[in-house]
Length: 91
Image 1 (tube, rainbow, N blue to C red):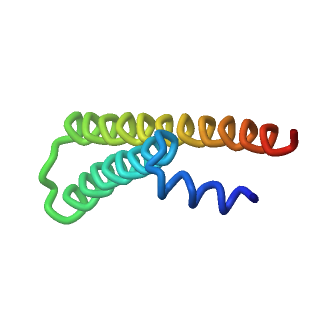
Image 2 (cartoon, rainbow, N blue to C red):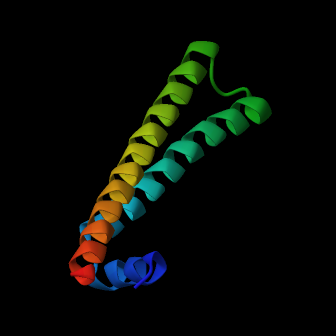
């Protein structure tokens, strides 16, 4: 079983690694939307003052970093499970 098939199996079984990757990607997109939303609102409407812009940019980046960390943890867990699966099947 190759990595692609194992990932499909994890998705079907709703494994923890799959949910971490999915949740991390969603959280990262939300953070990106906060940053781009702030940028677009400021460029078009001049809605925010400078300190508030920086605050929203920092919040968006922090949300994205949390999402990327969750995604990375999911990938690490997936890799560990895949290596266990390979070593178990080789015996």
